[in-house]
Amino acid sequence: MNKRNYQKELDALIEKNAAVGEKPSLLLHVCCAVCASYVLEYLYEHFQITIAYYNPNITEEGEYQYRYSELRRYIAERHMDAIRFEDVEYDPEEFFEKVKGHESDREGGARCSICFAQRLGYTAKLAKQGGYRYFATTLTISPLKNAEVINAIGTRIGELEGVEYLPSDFKKKNGYKRSIELSKEYNLYRQNFCGCVFSENEAKERMA
Image 1 (cartoon, helix red, strand yellow):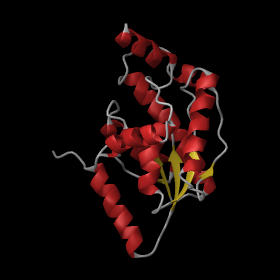
Image 2 (cartoon, rainbow, N blue to C red):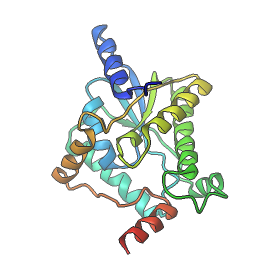
Image 3 (cartoon, one colour):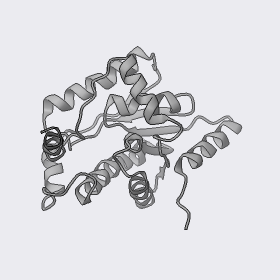
């Protein structure tokens, strides 16, 4: 059975909308400025983008706020004035409750899938409430994250919530490479862990 090519599916959808002159609304879950850099560059001309910076997995509030400020700075410096932001909650205790029993999982395991589902579920609910045409996430740009798992979770949640999930594999077409170039060009803060204390500890182990 052939794997789906999510990037080709996204390209085809963009072409289809462009052919009929549509620029549909998109609620985009964003985890940080580096991951958003290329994704926003790629999608900006094709969608009316609103950002949901929903990341309760980021344990430290200072880290959470710094990543958010870097995202806002990047958007301002790129003059992407049409981008809007949804008000979202920051509640790390909700994340810890969700992943209880999975504290010892290695990164990429079940704990990460629970985290993806939490963030995409919240985004989908916001998208439905706000009447957005699509919802999506920047998470698939990371070579450390399984795009197939993320897309499967997004598709399932979209069907449950009744809002269309936008398939993606943003690391394709040199997307990850471009995000690194943009992060250097705009001097974006590049963290070496996903956000939670568990991934931070694992990052420290790798550097030890």
